[in-house]
Amino acid sequence: MDKKQEFLALVKDNKPRELSQMSWDKAIEYFLEWNAVDRRALRECLREVIDLAWRFESSAAASASQLDTDLVQHLRMAPHDLMMSDDLTEKIKPAVAQVRSELFGSPHPPFAALEEAIQWLEQTAAEQAAQARANNQAPEALKQTILDMLEKYRDLTGETVDNPFKLELLEYVEPGNQWVRRMPVWGRTSLNPER
Image (cartoon, rainbow, N blue to C red):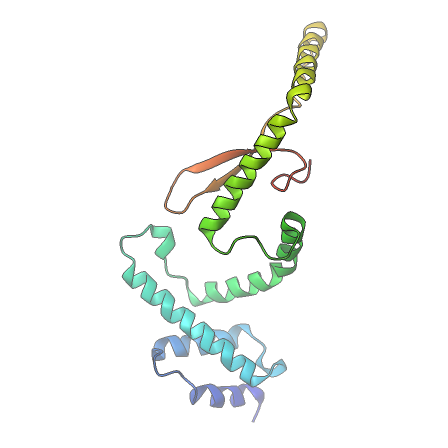
């Protein structure tokens, strides 16, 4: 008996009673299509199939029950999309951990939910704006002098020079709100570290 047949025998007898047969069969089918069973422990594969089947089940239930929410939030994900999502999530984990370490000083963000992330983002932006304004009085006079000199340069040479002080904006959308919000980000801060 090859590993695939062993796997099928194992999953056949381990379907959780609460799961629909359709979700269970779909999870097995997609798992076999997208995962190399012969190179992995069968018990680990079984746990992943059960998890995938529950995700299919909850996705179907969510799409059936959320008729009054925003269309994008309740569109049902196809099994292929769930598998691809898992695969892509695994592939970007190292890069996400690196970015979080640079921004937060830890691979874990200082928030657990989307609402907390929005609150953190707004609070951080407000703190950085306040600090930038406090540190900006002398540079503001210098900035005005530079702009005046650029204008004089344009008048003398006829050449157009881009404004070197163009404001950088970070765009985000709050849940339940269709409008994009923009907030200024300041150079060499956690919201705009590349400047």
